[in-house]
Image 1: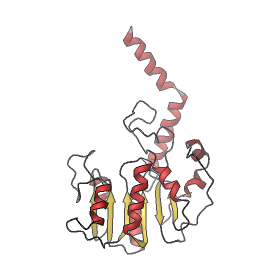
Image 2: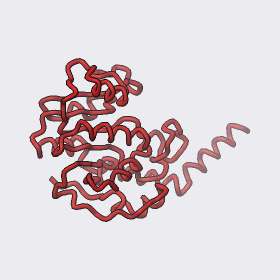
Image 3: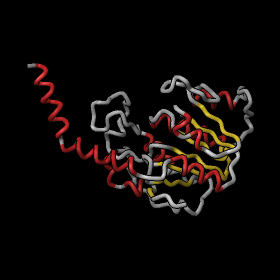
Image 4: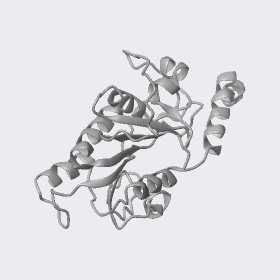
Length: 242
């Protein structure tokens, strides 16, 4: 009887309208193009970039190996991908602290990166630290690029990655969008989010033409419902054009 009851609950769950809606949103998001590596290579080429840093690599085949740049550096503690074939097997906090103290082999603390790609822990507090640290080591003409800035549903932006009993399943954007949205308010920075690959956000100290910033609608308490209703204004959300 217990098994039958559980089976009925699962069937009801799968029939739930909210579940079906989120599944449709997931499939639509997966269909979008281009992927993040195309956007990263675009901005590297735009400024003839020579130095690239990737935070949160997991499997290098997913993105790192697709990046075209003379000098590429990778950072990942290896929690999600045990092989972890990266340059610096560290958390991003430890990496930046060691870099700042000039205690990293083969990397001088005077280095400035053309592009830093952030795809590590998708929690707003951590992403904010990653952005602040990146701003210290990015060129004035360079770009900080973030993955997962445009979660298609509140289930995708849950804080707990390991909660899989939701319509989003194992797919997880976390609260990256909150950190990106916070930096959208800084007058000394310029930003855009491309409506593809779960939201590819770009931040720069230089006001490039493509940013064409849209006025921000305030979301004082960083509520997802406000983001959902005002994505264009919250994120400066646009389609990617070469």
